[in-house]
Image (cartoon, rainbow, N blue to C red; front, side, top):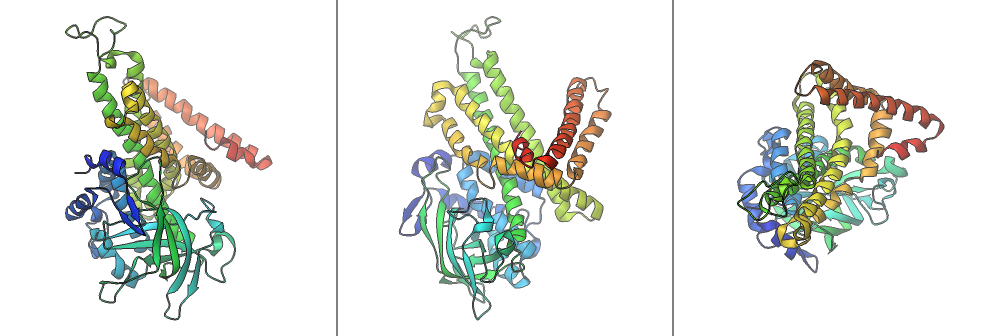
Length: 470
């Protein structure tokens, strides 16, 4: 359904005409089928039209969709975070107003954080929220890089927007969160008048060209406070963490797409004879899969893909435990594991996804540089994954500074203890004994290096930033 639209979407891109954004040919019909099959509601709450299924299942669906067509997957992907933000922090009225339509896919959602002068430093945003007499707020400002900020797939778009109240304290402690719909929702749940929020332009990008990346203008747009005043950043992290897991899946999808393409091509493409002798005597040359350099790349892609999948589903297990667990100590442990592993998954899987996509071009040789094979598009599409939802460097600082050192090493110890126990249990396993021995040494090295950095940071805080990415 969506894989055939991947290349045509890249060629056609989104069209912008006086504030109206049109998605590429076939996207609207594919989205309607996606909604008809119930995919938007997989792990949403049944109370509001969801299926109530585990995050683990939606992660599997997201991976397959992302591998087939990442640009298409962006449209419903951002809605999931908006839905969970309203589920966790919205009032009962807000939940009743928005969730069912969003869970069915009739309405979509966005995350409006970034401003032209403020990328990841949200403490300096300028968008303002002024109270109205009816209890709503007038939102004024401009947001950039808003994925799916405007499009023709749904009848309404629900923007989740960070803004400042007039009396808000400076910095991140003075940010509030608001629901700003494209169309005001009437008391009976129907779509009403157009809100004063508009798309000023769409970006011309390196990749994911079929995904509309918008400049959004809010001109005294009617918004509704979600969560406590000046605590918007806390509520927003519900959205951000969902988006970061989604971006980790993008890295996995890029690895998987590159591996699938490379493996198929390496079996069919012939060039020279294998160094150890003729492998395919019925052909004039052997398939390139017999050459060690190609096999090295294929096995690296395979490791990134299968290992990345294991990590994503491991995180999904902890996300399910946090959402549905009944044992408080298990929920607390799962929450801390999720907190520790999310920046690792986001940063590492996107970097390895980029590396795997680059190898895809290399395996194809000159054909990898040609658009029709899909490898160069995969490389362009996945490059953004190392940047949005916090760059690799920001994820690294979050991991080392906030999660590891900020918890005095407790969160890391939770994970390294799991690895240590695994190594002990498998020390005499003949099949994996050598790898277990290596893993045990690396696990100990991880702890030792962390202790060393912790000591260095007491004398020089820059040591944390210098070591974080490695």
